[in-house]
Amino acid sequence: MAVEKVTFTLPKELVRRLEKVPAGKRSMLVKKAVERELDREVAVAALKRMKGKTIWKEKYHPNLLRAKDFASFRPLKSRLTG
Image (cartoon, rainbow, N blue to C red; front, side, top):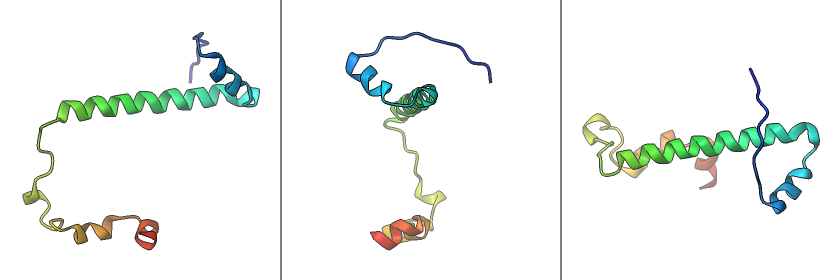
């Protein structure tokens, strides 16, 4: 993967917190944080575009008409804890 060095401005307090991260791991931390935020923004934009549109149609999911029907699709851990 090609990389590029960038410069940007951050609040002093955030820089102080970032400096506590070992030097070899800072870029990876920032990369993950930026990716996560950009992915979140894309998801929010998609949800805004879908606002007011029906995305669930009961006729396509006759096996999921009651709350109880969803239990088999919940992760095992959540079924055990709640």
